[in-house]
Image 1 (cartoon, rainbow, N blue to C red):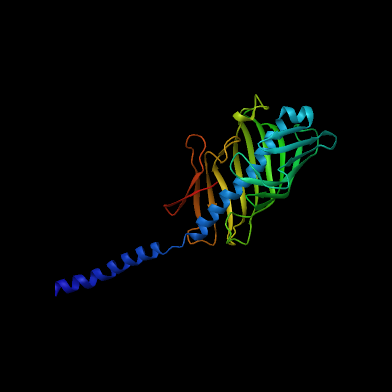
Image 2: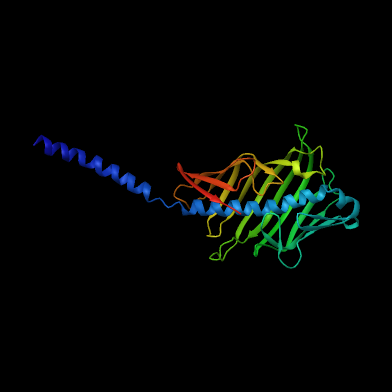
Amino acid sequence: MKKLLYIILLYPFIFGTYSCKDQSSEIDFNPNVLTAKDYIRAEDALFEIVNAFLKGIHDTLVHETGYAYIDFCDVVYNQSQNTMKFSYGVVNRLCGDNKFRRGSFLAEFTGVVFNNGVKAYITTDSLFVDDFLTEATIEIENLGFNSQNKVEYSMKTTSANIMMPDTAKTLGFQMTAEFVLVWEEGSATPAIYEDDVFLVSGSAAGTSTDGYAFTLTIQEPLINHVECFWMSGGLSQITVPAAKIPTGDIDYLNENGCYNQFYFYFDNNQFFEYIK
């Protein structure tokens, strides 16, 4: 009789324990993970534009002759109109990061390139990366020296629609962002961009290719080494309200200073992705 009573009392506890385990194992992390994977690719696409821009505006040949061929990109500076055009041509051009590009983007400056307070308005024009369209409008402003005596740029992405390398996707990844770039290393030699490192902080928001809304805040500054093809360090927090576990982290691995693997953490579960 005592054994039977013990089993009866223990049954709800056992049932509850297994129910919790079953509930945990059934959590759908797809909204989080798919959105995070989309985001790192979209962020990468935007900084490919920005890093090409940063190289062009400080290039000696561009300033002296109005033209330079930088990383398989034709950079043309029209001093009288305060514009700079970055073009990959009308047919696919294989670039140093093993991506094909065609199309262009134009930077229009509000003053002399690139004095304090001058803004650059960047607009893409039929820019394709590996045959996937990248549309963006970006506003970059030279903020001058900050309190640590380092040059800062604001980077405001007013709109972006980026198609992902997935033939099953019919919608682009849409986002806006407000970032600040601090020129952490290499500012003493602006014409030599191989040693340039910018620390990136700020936030972003938008909608994934699967229709999930998200917000993102950089928790630890991202390391943007302009000669690396990917962000080489930092930590961001991403929130996807539609997900069962809305908030998690994106960890930008700092391995040998440049690495294309990213970790995602949601409810202590680890996921990862490699990007090209």
